[in-house]
Length: 229
Image (cartoon, rainbow, N blue to C red; front, top):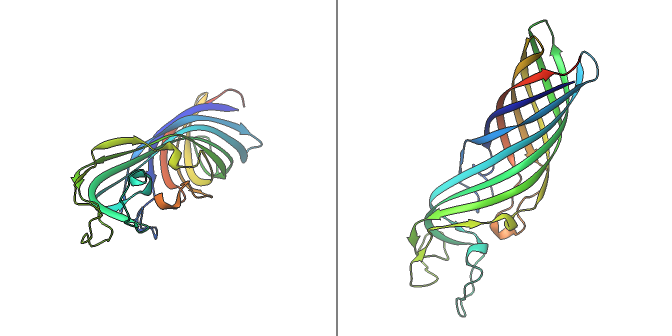
């Protein structure tokens, strides 16, 4: 049995070239990823990985984009019937912070006294800790993507930071898989691991705010202390 820590970066694939117009065109940014690892050996080839990780998802967009329904649904626009999507020019950054609890099988495909190579895969539960959207800018909101039909003759301010945790489901089920290698030292080992994961369910509670599954690639390095062989 071994206990250790790891840290690295999380690169989400949530919005690039999405078929969903709400999230399409967002750029992903590197966010922190770290956690605690418990490895329980079954034999020389197989072991069980139990992890307790913090993962942050960050995406940004600047320019013309859809204004999420949750942002303007509290306003009154008289007899005007709004379309499914309305548009404006502004900068936005969406950040979701998760506590991830993966449980994976780990298989050593190559072993020697110093270097080992492995693959790992299994399910993971993601618990949403919080979510925020930060927007900056000022301008009119339009009912068409060409910005020719304003819904009101005023400039709306977009300089705000909102807690949007209730826009998303509190629990997400994911599948994770990856590969890596270890370098043995007395009483422990250093390791590097590249993982990919994909959510199995849509994360938005309101389809007007988008309809997406989480996706990410994580790269981490860490150290495992061998409690006992």
